[in-house]
Image (cartoon, rainbow, N blue to C red; front, top):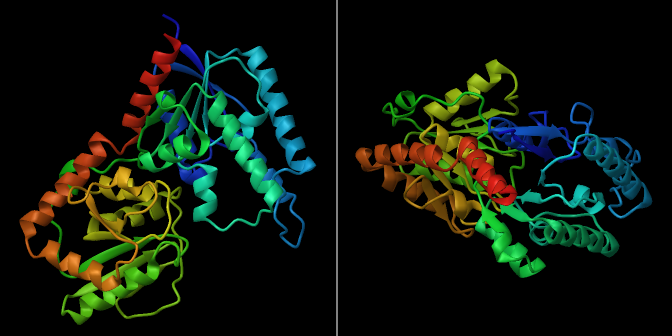
Length: 376
C-alpha cells in the first residue's frame, strides 16, 4: 500500500532546530518517522518568511503592521508558491503547525490538521503586543479562518483547546489534545536517570531568557530562603543574566543546544540538579518541562497556561499558585527532601511521565493515527 502523502506547511524554516525553539523540527521529524510521504511545503531550506519580514523592519524597530499591504503581499506570495507545489505534488492532507497566517491565504479542498499551543485571544492576554485595534482584528480574523477551515484542531493543552471552543466557537468534535515532547537529540538512559543523586548541596536549576516573566526573582528568593533555613543550596541560572548576585548563584548567560559540547554541559546540569525551578508568570506549553522530566528532574512550577496538561501534581512535579513566594517553594523543597525514598519515587515518576506522554514519538504516534482516521 503506498504511503499517504502529507504536506508539512509553515513559512518558518522547520528544518532549523532553532525555529520555534526546535519544536517545528521535532514535529517534522516525528512525522517523517511514520509510514508517510512528507512533502515539504514552502522553502524550509531558505530564510523563513517571518525572518524576511523582520529583516525589512525600519531602523527604528517600528513594529510590523500585521494587516499592512506589505505583510499581506509577502504571505500572498508564499501562498502562491505553496499552491504551485500542491499542483505539482498533490497531497492527501496538510499538517499546518502554528500556521494561522499561512492558512489565511491558502486555498485547498484537502483536509487540514492545524496545531497550536495557544489561541490569539490567550496570547494577547499573556504577552505585551504593540498592535493597534486594526491589527488585533486582523489577527483574530486569521485565527477564526484557521480554526474554521481545519478538519482537525490539535492543541498541546486543555487551556488552549478550551479557548478555541469558548472564544472561537470551535467544534469540540474537531479537537484533539496532544502534549508536546522534549527537544532532545539523545535521550538519557533510564539507568543513568534513576541513579541516586547527591542531595547536598541542593542544586536548583533555572532556565529561561526572560528573568521576570519566567519568575527568576522567585527562584532566587527560594535559594535565599533555603540558605536561611540552614539548607546547603545553590541556584544555577542558564539563558539570562539576572539583576542579582550571590555566592551561591551560578550564571551561564547562554548555551547553544546545537553545539554538542554545550548541549552536554546542559545535560550535566539536568543530571546534577535536584529540582527544576520554574515559577513562570505566563507560559503556553513549555518544552523545557518535558526535557527536565526526561532527565528524571522534578519540576516546581506555577499553575498557569497549558502547564496543568504537562505537570501532574506529586507525579512529575508540583504546581504552585501564582501568588506563591520563594519561601513557599523553599518549604516545599525541604518537605520533599525530608524523605529520600519519596524523592527517588518522584524521579522515577518524572521519567515515566516522559516515556509515556511527554516525548515526540508519542506525539507522532497520535498524529499518525489522526491522519489515518481522516484519510480512511
